[in-house]
Every structure is written in structure tokens, then in C-alpha cells.
Image 1 (cartoon, helix red, strand yellow):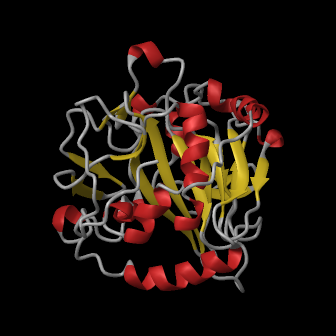
Image 2 (cartoon, one colour; image 1 turned 120 degrees about the horizontal axis):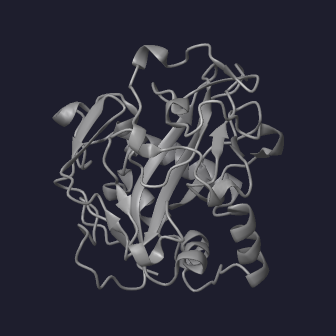
Amino acid sequence: MTNTLERNFTPSPEEVAQFHQRGYLGPFKVYEEDEMQRLWKRERLRLMDRSQAVYDEGDAQAGNTNIANYDRHLDSTFLADHICRPEIVDRVTAVLGPNVLCWRSEFFPKYPGDEGTDWHQADTFAFASGKPQIVWPEAEREYGGTLTVWTAFTEATEETACLQFIPGTQRTMYYDETKGMHYQPDKINAQRKEDGVTRGFYGYDYRELQKDPDWKPPVDQAVSMIMRPGEAVMFWSTMMHASKPHSAPDKGMRLGFAGRYVPTCVEVYPDTDDVDEYGGRVSLQEYGTVLVAGVDTYTHNRKVTTTTRGHKFPVR
């Protein structure tokens, strides 16, 4: 990472304008392909050690649910540096401004035979837990949601469950997160067809949140994000996005890693001590937001400056 610290990866004004129009920017390179393959071969073994993870598998029933994938940047040196990489942060600050937090990270694995992910949007991220997880100040309500930077740790093609976007949909919410969804783990990988594709949402049915139950996503406008290992794409969480099924039995797992970013003015997990979703519950006792750029003069968020192993987050 040291050889990129002095480089500038700020997108051009034309690229920023295009981002605001479409809702996404990329794919762009974060690592060379062979570098990403080498790093992941090493790091996947290190990540098996959860002894310093902020969410203990035994504590609060995180288990093997999707919630166990959260926030490994808080204990992994590699992921701590990854969320702060200038290839990512320079692009994020071009949209959010100079003072930015990473408030969550997640792994998104797809194995051969896995269903696609439902079309969805996320504004406050209250859809599963019932509580808003991020709240923008009223003065900034032109915005909402989070900037997600999704990095392909392995190849993502149309056969191996690449992301799909519907450009321009970030300006209108078609789902009401306050309605809540019912967790039904027996429906994971259920054979439910949506726009001709088998889809689900990790034990939920995202269609339960639709404002208009008869509305259908405009899938004829969808674009597929085919990505090589080490490439990333930045997008608004409020833009409609999904993923294709993993339909290649001769291919291995497709793995994406998402960092989620907001300006420091945004409240993260307000009045919340734990997160209860995807059939698991984790305590936020050891959780903290990470400043990746600028300064944070606000006092409303939990903050950490080092990982649980003592590695300092490199602020841009």
C-alpha cells in the first residue's frame, strides 16, 4: 500500500457527474489481479482466526448467519488497510466530501448453485433489524443511504453471480424499510422465480417492503457488473441492485467485500446496543466507526482508531 499513498485517485468532474446520474462508478482497479489472488489466498486463512473479531460467534448467536460476515476490518490488518486504500477513499470523498467514516464492511459469498439476490434498495438499513442503522441530518436529506464500495476478491461474471444495477433508481425509494420483513430461513435457496431468475434475500423476501405490491422492477434497464479479481465498483445503496445466481458448477465461490461509507455528520446505530437480523444478534460493545478521511468533529458516533490487534487505520 505504501506505493499508492501519495497517488491521487480522485475522479474527474465528468466521472462524478456520471456517478450522480447513474448511481454508480466503475469498475475500477484497486489491486492488480495477481496481487488480489495472492493476497486472498493468504488472508482467507488468517480470517479463520476470529479470536479478535468484535462479534464473537458464541456471543449473541452470530453463528453461521450473514451477520457473522460483518466488520472484519475491525480485527483484520489487511481489511483495515483495504477500507482506507486511496483508490477507494479518493473516489468516496469526491462524492461525500472530505470527512468520511467507514461504518460497516461485509463479505458477500456466492457458491455454485446459490440463488441470486433480490432486487433491493437500502436507505436507513432498518429493513431487517427494525431500527435505523444510519440517519442523515435533516439538512442533508437530499441524500440518504450509504456509499458502498464492492470489491471483487474473486472473478464475478454473469455465471458466477455478478452484481446487477438499475441505473438512476437511487433518487426514488420503491421500498418502505419501516414495514419490516419476516425472517424465514427455510426459504433460503427456495425456488422462487423473479424476472426469470431464481432470487432470494438470505432468508427474507424483500418484496414484502414494496410500497406498491403490484410494482415490478424495470429489469429491462439492468446492467451487469462483470469484474476481475481486484476490481471494485462504488454505488449508492439506494440504487436498485441485485445479483445473478451462481450457475457455474465448475467454478469456485464468488466473493465480494463491501465497505460502506458516510459523512461524519451521519449518525450510526443511534440509540442501539445490538444488531438483531438474519437470525443472529451481535453486541455493539466493541464496535466503532472508522475515520478514513479528514476529521470527525462530531460526538454522536462510537469511534475506533486501531483494530483490535492494535493496527492503526491509515486516515487519508
